[in-house]
Image (cartoon, rainbow, N blue to C red):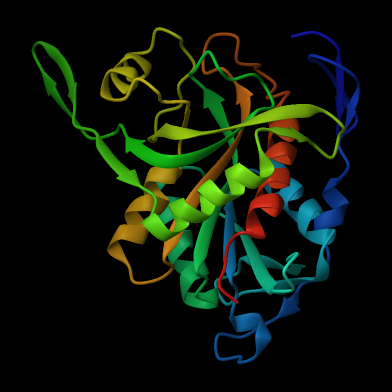
Length: 296
């Protein structure tokens, strides 16, 4: 990739023009409203719950929510900070969105904080928003993938003949899949981020597990494409959220929205140069998609 990217005061090389990070660290440091576990009222219910993992992902989601009405932060009993806002849809519905950052990367933390979000807000839909590594030739840095199927690659058996993986695939709930189809028909595939950079939206399966993939010849990549030849990306939290959704009563559906920050190979930038860019693009799709979700 070529060109210059300016993120948080640092300069990186990338394709296209100069990109500027519109949200600084100080912009998500508002003093939160303290809300106890027994508090009733509007802040205890949301239509859409959002989970992020990395700081860059959270900043991008917060920036998107700050562009909506009623934005505020709330300190939850767990110690986590929730970011709340309201989205008015073209048909006049008002959807409440509540976002929260997962404590740490990985499947276990994702599952635990999924529970925290559900117990607090009882959202109809959970969105996992952030970055991923692309494993398809169709993808470019900055593109966004919405996963309609999660393939967990962690379960395996070690034998004298090598590793035998026991993958598990989970698809999105049918009602949510139908809304995703409506969104795709209306919005198309071509988007522009808040940085003015164009990108494309893709929908398809992604692989998820605790291992970070940074090798084009990785056994995990090879296995994933054997399991499903249309796998688009790999990341480290979606399988945890999918499993938590399967095990708990809660929202009717979950979706994973991932901006592509690298191509899951040896070209993966050591300084994570494209995390901000990919996070902003994922948050852009999150807001566009949200108008198609929620029943109220």
